[in-house]
Image (cartoon, rainbow, N blue to C red; front, side, top):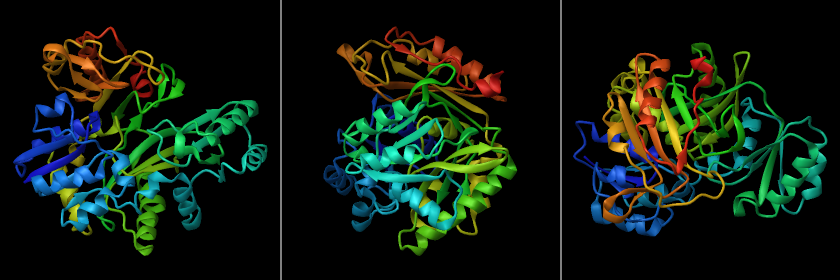
Length: 431
């Protein structure tokens, strides 16, 4: 099989790396890809939001399966367009991807079908006074979410009423562009966060090991939100009992509701959770693998991921979930950890083009993979930074503590004065 993978981040590099190991795969092509993915298969310089050019590329290459990594082309309807052309595509349709693309849509759905989540109300830019009045019905801290896609940075937790009022003004005035033309205000949920990922064809569902991400930029979970500074799996907070509640109280009713609406959800469903006293509540849904969560999942699964992706795209999961889980090696998952190296200044302003050395040496450490994200080739082919989050250093081991020790030893092998990382990723399981 020939695979066309859409995306250029560490998530897509991890997917490309994992799919290329399948005995079913002849080639993995990427668009646009990155320097790490270029070592796996041909990369084509087509932007992920240029859906017309992506269609043309698919018609030219005629892949057996298209795998869509990031959220933007999903929200733009790339899956619909390619499916109409006769391609098998891993990823939800535009209508189904509203679970991520619109916080209001997903919250309204959960409220309607009784999925546990935070109390909320949504507000348009014409109703700033209403938004501020609703704040006064809640206790701090206050959770404000841009309704649309904001690259993982559209959630603000304000500690005081004054901060929340100011944030409402900024968000509804275009802080996140069109994404915050409307916003959702939620009650704050206490507990411990984790994420569960489900491969689904709209009916059957295969559950992957739970992951814990670290969204704050600073150690001690301080500072602004980012796209993610590190992750590990399995996350002990998601016990078998919690996972069963996620299945029965969240995933099953959501998939049923999407089917009933005529918009069955196919692909991977990301369920962001807040867990308190063994009770899971939904923080958010995403319509794709998380980043950096994908990196630890792909590294830790010892089996073949491709049959699961193909079945989610084409059908056949219902009644065969255990077989696909066994094929992917879900039961034999290896503890896995990833540490993100980011450009100095991220998630604010940062410089591009700083030299990165030692990546090859880090990747030669046993049980380590270095997945590229914001990298490029500079003069003479030297590796340079080209984004905010630049590398995901990922390790597997017999235990989570060993996985983190190995990952940080690989981080230390990389020479990049222009970057930084959090040194406390996995602090809950490393103490």
